[in-house]
Image (cartoon, rainbow, N blue to C red; front, side):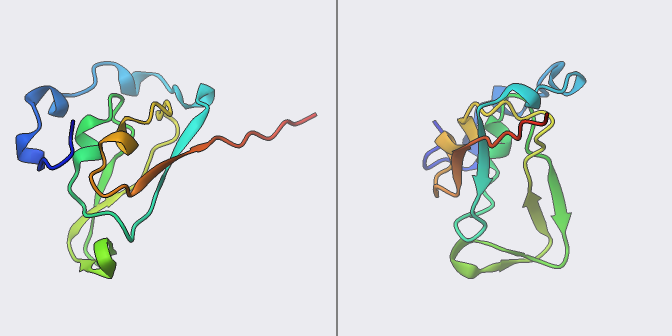
Length: 112
């Protein structure tokens, strides 16, 4: 859906708050977790807009963020996944136009 689109072309539904998603921590039952490759990220924000549970908070980084083709983006958004809320659905990885997000199997540690 997001391939070849800028954030301005995403339907309004993709930018509305995710209802009660932030009221409940859902990250404890996922099977996959997104891994960002900052060298591939173009900071297009499509992953942020498409995340159904708002699990990709954005932060302005005035020091600069290394991204697409080693370009340093100053004063732009730093993307990090909030694993308390990420359900591992993979929408972010599916919509990323530069394939900067890969879904990896969650590693669980069993404590006795």
